[in-house]
Image (cartoon, rainbow, N blue to C red; front, side, top):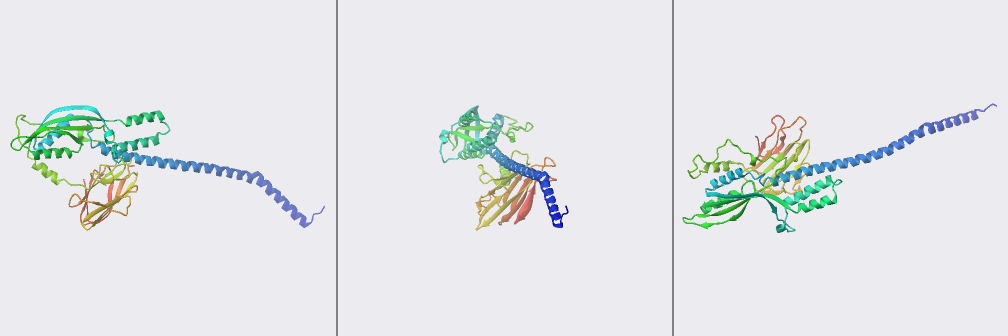
Length: 405
């Protein structure tokens, strides 16, 4: 049978069609199924990656929150004694007595003992109990981390214990004689002591020659230090001379040198702390000095160099400031300014930092300072690495002086 040319073309087309169909069924169809399966697997892995990223972001946020809480707790606990070191307390009180030029005799110590803090007295809705708030934040953070391991019974017990706060307490009774202005100075020294002391009772009796006498009772409170805190209160230098060579000789103390030293001290308006990333505290902490509640503080926590911007301005003799890190800014509305009164003829900033602990320690700050005032900004950097500085002032405008100690 002889096929025409047209039939031959049709047979060739049929043959190639059958060949393509077989190739599709045997090869391409299997590859398409594999591609579909791989796409489904890719979707699953993309969802897992997204979930892991969220967990990592959550852990990073919890880590910085943990460090900030640590910093606030360290600040609050530093106001109290680290422990009842009676010998150091006696030395501190004796120095206050000498500086105030009052005649004081320590009558007795009571304690130390564990005292319960009564919160019912301060049970007001509008009052802010800062330490209680920090403890609640700390517990809430721990609950996020350990939410799968805690049970309801344990949390109930924790709540019961949290309502009962205890602290170590010791009382000191002093009999004093002297002039009224000396007593006022002694009280002022107690109030300005770097640890919080409480004058529980004060008795004043007028004597002859315009002198007064009486008893004063001072309460001391102590909380244990965290492992990350160093406090030199318990450091005792045995090589120094204490007391008098002649215990029966009495004389008035000349405090002119001490007053001169006090007047020569620099009063700092702002303070910054720059730490390594492996610290339990944030790598960058910046705020106004004497801000015990940390309302003006901003933080950052980065394994690399953090950019910090600080601005000062002056309007009609009034001074203003604002600053920010990569994480925080103060004030929150950065278009606004916050007024402040410089403590001296210059605007003073002190920066505490640490030497590098390894080659991988890369954390630090680049400070951009903009001074639009007629005052000079004085920056003192303490403890920085000599060869690989952790703190650098990379941009500045206006009058700025930088000193490294």
